[in-house]
Amino acid sequence: MQKHHLTVAEETTISTNVPGRLDRLPWSSWHWLVVVSLGVTWLLDGLEVTLAGTLGAILKDRNALGLSDAQIGLSAASYLAGAVIGALVFGYATDRLGRKKLFTWTLLLYLAATAATAFSWNFLSYSLFRALTGAGIGGEYAAINSAVDELIPARIRGRVDLIINATFWLGAALGAVGSIFLLSGSVVDPAHGWRFAFGIGAVLGTGVLFLRRHVPESPRWLMIHAREKEAEQIVNQIEKTVVDRTHQELAKPEKELTLHVREKTPIREIWDYVRRRQPERSFLAISLMIAQAFFYNAVFFTYALILVDFYGVRAKDTGWYMLPLALGNFCGPLVLGKLFDSFGRKPMIVLTYGISGLLLIISGYLFGIGVLTAHTQAIAWTVIFFFASSAASSAYLTVSEIFPLEIRSLAIGFFYACGTLAGGVAAPALFGQLIGTNSRMNVFYGYLLAGSLMIGAALVESRIGVKAEGRSLEDISAPLSSQLHGS
Image (cartoon, rainbow, N blue to C red; front, side, top):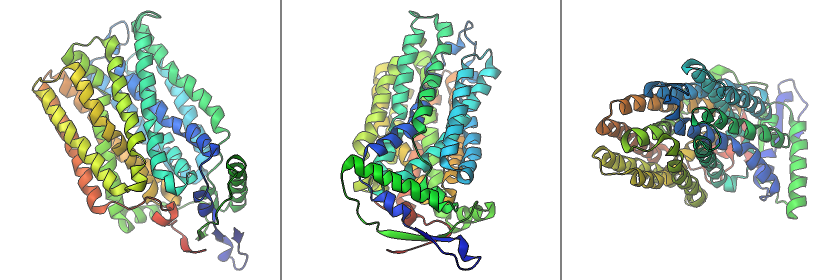
């Protein structure tokens, strides 16, 4: 990598092979460190969502917080509203200040807020702390998705991204087991056990802080912000570590990048790119995000209420029904993930979105007419979310791949916020109201809407999806001020 010192204008121009050097690295234990340290974000989110879902019925107890069905739905919406704000604010900050700094700040916010949730005393305090927790998680999504994709080799980026996202369901399983244990009455009074449940996330997050100390700043981010010497040092160290651990010779980088470095990208340029230069990609991103957000949040934030109100399951036993669901969600990307790199992004996204939507409509109708039991409902949803998990993960993968380096985190944050606001905030509030009517068919209409959105997103992908498998991020979407040329 070299910097040219000619004219004032050219002093900001660099030639770099950093992307090619990172993409050609063999898989190593160093990559595992990145995956575990950063990928735990999804585990924490899964834990939070599951705890909120399985504890919902307990929180209706007067000895707990005495919440109504509508208030439980609104508190879930407040978590997601916080995630929207966090994604936007921290997404912009991540592109300005760096990946590493922000994935530390957002984790600290999550830790403080989830610990505070355990001390909630009424609906307003509970909703406020849930909103702050959501802000931390929303910021994590923006900072982590960009950091992971910028450090993982292109040839396996799809499967790694999907599997990392699947760890959401390890968190969901942990949350389900934790809720079963703490609400059983064998340790503490169930009316107070929910407070200890939120402590699980704080304990896990504290451990993650120490792991992340060993994850470097993204060299791709450094090179675009006139810090090419730091980028060079980090890549040299990564290469040395990988060679020492794999004992493999490194291939020559295939491409070099020429770009004009700058400290920030003007808002007007970001808007011009998203709105005018790439409107199809923007529409694709928002379609995938809204569909999966509504689909998932429609089910998981209100699952405990469905079990208790329609199937007569005891509130303290709802965690058992989350376990097979979490298993199906985790296994889906493990089995299907590699196909996103081999068979291709576009056909797999169409397939997983389409199947998920169709199956939810069918199972929702069976629920509406009273055919399903609590057990067959759990089986049906386990099958559905085997496919839906890969679909949802592919939405985040798509957004992180199809927008340029300078605005990658902001794009992730923006489209995550749009999807969460339109799909995630609306879904729990809507389903809370539908469940409150005690009508199965009213709830089915909600499932019909969720399934239709997924099928619609599949159709959008089939028309304007981007072929991204095996390609460098800079090849899929070149930095705003770059020019690719052969090495």
